[in-house]
Image (cartoon, rainbow, N blue to C red; front, side):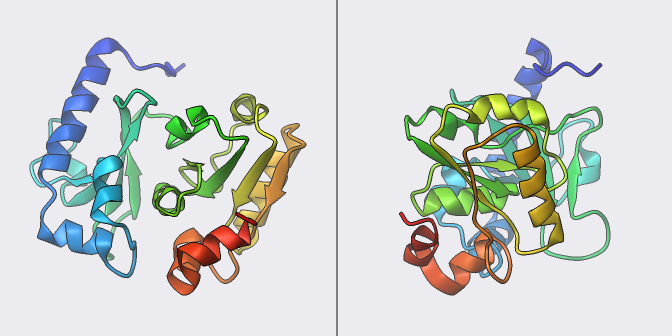
Length: 212
């Protein structure tokens, strides 16, 4: 069974890799992250430590040219990295390293001391939600929900699931509800996902969708 907590040597390598890729962020990657597809501010990019793989570390050769998405602990240490193809083109859009396991993204929000929290589908949607002042953690996809994660969410008065406006998004809501949580509040992102809703309605529109 794959260990949930990586070894010390693995954590050191992952942390150093994430910092290296953040330092390689160039104009092309920055244009993608700040452009109309992602709409992230440079402050958000820095706080989430997004980077780009120009000079891959050993074992990362298959993600050369991908955006790096570090999974940071509440203390700011990187324990895992996912990768997103820079722009479109052939090949997988998202990649994880061999042996890695799905885990919640942006878990620092669990310690913000708020009574409510948001769940998003995808890391970039989480970044947009936080950019809009919402406490949020993300999933690495609609099909990755693990019932054990309910333990992280029972502490909140309400868990707003900002789900994509499609069948997988609605199935995600059902999976979370069936895990025993009775505090969930499904919020469909009408016409798309968190990022597209933000693009169409802005910060105030997204917050109003939640009654914030």
